[in-house]
Structure formats: structure tokens, C-alpha cells
Length: 222
Image (cartoon, rainbow, N blue to C red):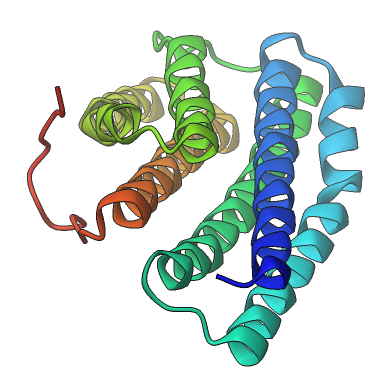
């Protein structure tokens, strides 16, 4: 690898890691805004969304420039491909954080029926998956990536539980349809963030091991 290519790859890695930490912060603020009923925090997530969008474009352009100018092969090519995919996943997570923040603002302003569902536990699980998927990228930690991937089913089950509870509450409280559906939407957004965290983990595995495991069963590395 040429020295110039190495510098561009190192700079690209710094940018994708920075984007990951920024997106992680937005998810955290969106969820905390709901738990703490902090509309100002939620609004800040909405206001800063363009920063993630702009960063996604910069990273994609950098990837395409490296591909065009250096025509990387082997592990360098895998890295560029992985960054392109992770970049897209992170941008989408940023959009989902905005969606949670929007629904948080609505629920803060319109207190309604209480659902017997531990939303905070689901938030913690999803945030942990996202954090660890980014850590797996930073450290090229395949084992951590596998463990993130294995947790996706747990979040799917939480989302199904939420759906069942909302269905029951709709019968009991037909006057609270909007509030209930906003809660369900938050759960669905969290489930989608977990999916994207899983995608990032799978891309880390591809980057390190040159294996596409998207449709393979969960396996832990020793």
C-alpha cells in the first residue's frame, strides 16, 4: 500500500468513527429526552440532524475518491466497502433518533395512558448494541461484533411485547390512540436501530474475516 493511500484510509477511519460517536450521542439524547421529559434535549436532536447528513455525504465522497484514484484491493478494498455500508447505516440511525425525538416531544406535551412496558430497558439494550458495534469497528473486535449480532433477537422480542401491550391498551383506552401509537412507533424505531447496529457488526466481521454472514446463524468466537 502506498503511503498516500494509507493516510487517506486512516483519515477515513477517523471520520467514520467520529460519525459513529455523533450518532450514538443523538440516540442517547433522544431516548433520555423521553425518560426525563426534556423537550429541549429532544429539539436539539432535530436541529442537529443536518450535521449527520452532511457527514454522510463527505464520507461517501471520500470512499469514491479513494476507489477511483487508488483502486485498492484485498483488505483495503474490504475496508472501503465496509465504510460505505456502515456510513449508510449510521445515517439511518441518525434519522431514527430524530424520529424518536419527534415522538418524545409529542408525548411530553400530551401525557396519557401508562403502558406496562419497560421502555427504558429496551432503550438501554439498543444503546448498548450501538455502542458496542462502534467499539467493534474501532478495535476490529470480531467477538464483540458477534455478540452484538446475537442480541438482535432479544430486541425483536421486546418490540413484539410492546405491540401486544399497545393492542390491549387500545381496547381499554380508545381515546388514547395517538399516544399509544407514538409509544409503539418509538419501540419500532428502537428495533430498527438494533437492526442497523447488527448490520454494522456484520460489516466488521466482513472487514476482518472477509466473510459475509448476513444470513448465517449466530456463532461466537473464542
